[in-house]
Amino acid sequence: MTDTTQSSVGMAPKTTGPKPPRQKKPNYNIIHADPLPLQVVPLPPLIPHNPLSLLHIIYAYLFPSPSSYAQPSPPYTATFSKATYSVNVTDAVSIQGLWCRGFFGKGSLSRSEPTWLTRTRRMLGVIGINENLTAEELTERRRIERREFKKERARLEQEKLERILAEEGKIILENSDEAPKPDEGESSAAPVRGSSTPLHNQTIQFAQATETRPIVIDSQHPVVDIEDLEHLQLTFEEAFFLAFGLGALKIIDGTSDHEKQLSNNELFSLFRMCSYTPVREVNALQPDDPFMVKYLVYHHFRSLGWVVKPGVKFAVDYLLYNRGPAFSHAEFAVIIMPSYSHPYWSEHQEKTNKRQGWHWLHCVNRVSSQVKKTLIMCFVDIPPPKAEKGDVNIPALLGSYKVREVSFRRWLPSRNRD
Image (tube, rainbow, N blue to C red; front, side, top):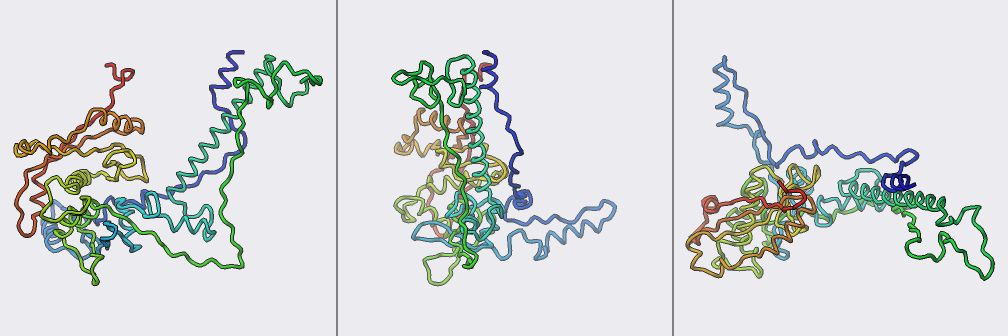
C-alpha cells in the first residue's frame, strides 16, 4: 500500500482525450533574419585563374552602387522629446525596421515588442482570436496551459490519495454508497469529505478555470479601424548607437518648430546632460557621466554581437541575449562598475569612496542565479578629465576608456565541491 501511495502522488497523471492544438509560432528566423538594421552586400567572387575578377572587386569596393549601401535608405527617423527626455519613434516603417532588425527599443504600451494595436483589435473583435498572435500572447497562453495542467494534476493526485485512504478506512468519501448514516444527536466517527474535519484530513477544493473570451461585437455595427497610439521608445544608448555607431537613425529635435536634425556631437552632449538628475550644463559634465559609462558598455557588447536590453527587472544594468528575446532568455546579466584606477583619482576621495558592499553583491548574484543567468561585472576605467574646446572628437574620447569583464558565480557547497 505504501508503494501505491508513492507512485500515485509522485507521478504525473495521464491525461485522457486529445490535447488542444498549440498555436503555431511565427517564423522568427525570417522575421529577425538581420541582426542589425544594415544591409550586408558581399563583394564579387575572386576567381584565381581570371585576373579580371580582382579588378571587379576593386571597382565594386571603390565605387559601390546605391543598392549596396549598408545603411537603410532613407534612414530611420526618431524624435527627441525634451518634455519626457526620451527618444521616440512614431513612423511605422522605422518601428518595424528597428525592432525586427536588432530588437531596438520598447513599445510604449507593451512589455517589449510594440503590439498594442494587434491586441486591441483582437479585444474588440476586429481580428480573430487566433489571428496574428504576438509573442507576448503566445507566452501568456502557454503560462495559462501550464497553470491549468498543474491544477488538474493536483486534483487527480488528491483524488487518488483519498481513494487509498478510503480503502484503508481512514476516511469515508462523500459519494460512497457504503457510508453509514449517522443517527440524530450522534456524530460520525470517521471524517467525511466536505465536513468539518481536522486540518490534516481536509481536502483541497479548486476553483473552476475561467476562460478569457473576446468581446463580441454586433455585426450590424461595423468596426472602424483603430488608430495606433503606441510608439517605440529608445534609450539614449540605443539611439546614439544607431545614429553614431551605425548611421541608421536620424534624430530630430522635437523642441524646434522646424525639423532640425541633431548632429552626433549635439546628441553626445545632449544625452550626457540629460543623464543627470537634474539636468546639468555642458561645463559641469564629468568623465564618469551615467550616459558615458553605460554607452561604453552597450557599444562594447553590441560590437561583439550580443543583443543588449535593459535589465532593471533583475536589478542589473543590462541583459545579454544571444539572438534576441524572441528566441531565448537572456544568458548573462551585466552590472556596470566605474573603476578609478588612474593616479589622478587618488587625489579625489569622493570618487574612490563610492563602493558597494559584499551584501549588495551577494543579493544581486542570488537574484541572477535564481533566474539562471550568469552575473558579469563590467569595470570601466575612467580617465582623468580633459579640457574640451569646440566639437568633441567622439572616437578619440571613447578610445580613452577601457572595459574589463569579470564573471561572478554563486558558490554552492553541494554543487562545487571539486
